Length: 213
Image 1: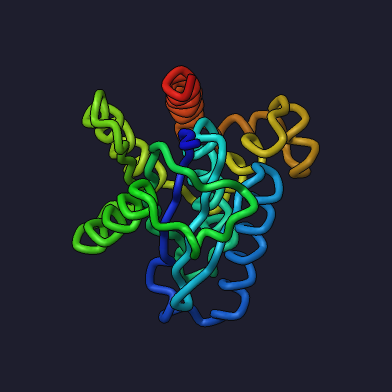
Image 2: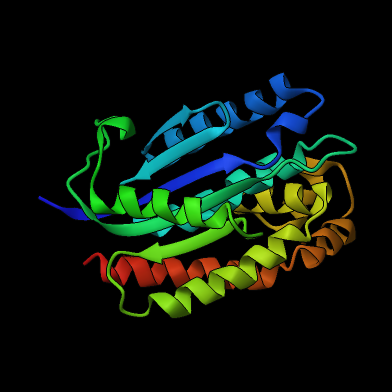
């Protein structure tokens, strides 16, 4: 039976220019493994710097995309920003978590791949598409704003967002984890536009939860 799932297809940005590609790919592989273990999906890396993630719960699709980009940015080299292009597609498919993503070929998988191909011709790093077109243009536009927001993150801002999403704890607890003051945490999250990002993720999570019923 087909159910609503999420597929994220992506590739690293300028990975060939990395001075330490081994560390870059280790960060990517570790992050993919950590995210799929936490959210119950499957992931594959292909063509060197390409990857795909399938998630049985569409409500976590955008948090996973943000966490992945934040992980890369926070571990960036001093003189090179690490990042990825990620195309998120939401739709119904017969894929199940025990199935490898390389064995899947449904519409939502194709849509995600095609969206990534289209992104390679522009400057966007995050895109969202729905196989059910109702309201998709509005959500895609919101995602473009969030993409622009993430593009402005420093490594410190990315780290603060990553830990905030991962641990869902107070700024005081986050400050203790980072070994800095609470005002410093607030400053980093403000620079990352965390309040807007959190509202965006909450809104899409509820939207996809309602759509999958």
